[in-house]
Picture (cartoon, rainbow, N blue to C red):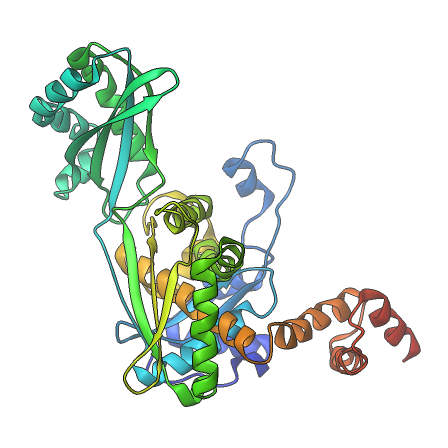
Length: 416
């Protein structure tokens, strides 16, 4: 893809699908799946969760004009909130004028933890470290796949915890899980080595499980936004002031980071990721220094252009899990065109930065409600029963009156 896609939002569904099909090479069957209601039937849902009674669909949209590490992307997003996809696309369009997003991330290292109690922590730590090679060998015997790829358990570390019940030894496995999210293999390895660690330490293993605080799978990156496209020097300065507000006040930081996660989780939803793990790790990282703060930083370069930076843990996978089960997740992965978990992490991180830019730009200029309430008004008009060709007129009237509500939408519909 070497073209900038203009006014994608004004096109019909067929025209949008035609563009996506042409750019990404969707098959006839994949397009039919996209045109279906949610992509799965009850039979599939019943195999995915317990006590299934049906399926629940969310909107799937495409964010356009993303350039990340000099590669162009169409980014699928699954989200119910109005304005998010439009805002991300607008941010990407501005960022690409200065080269787009420059992202990088760490290796795909998962952290597994084995909790040991009823032991002398100091001497047990020494014994574990002395036998670390044996523990790693046993851990790696639990996954032939990772071992053949030159990945798997790489390091062992120990830490002491002081708790109301006494001292605990936490043995941690650092595992290179490749392109997988890695939860299952990490848990398997932790459970596999626990009896050996009990024997070595003379203690008792309680929990043997991964940590979703994936600080060895960080993604970080930056983008520059031309000051004139942002709205001028005053808006640039206001955005920096807005960031400093979030960096200094947890009440603002929570909402600031929620906007970042709007973009991140929408892409994670579309590509079949563990969104709860991503959310938990992000918010823990935001509070890593004892105070909850912003996941992004904003500043100016020497020319007065706005520069954004983002950093957070990002545990994602392109193999295993729901991405290999749900047909819509498979198609979204194809549309996105990533070839590794590392590349996916970079795309998701860039989306978080884009979404943050759009949110604070709106807040620092005309306010968040102008664009958001127009989209909200469209939802209300549709909910009131308006036909597609009547929605715009109802929306314009509600905005003109400053009365955006379901009751007013019904009144206007009935008065036609």
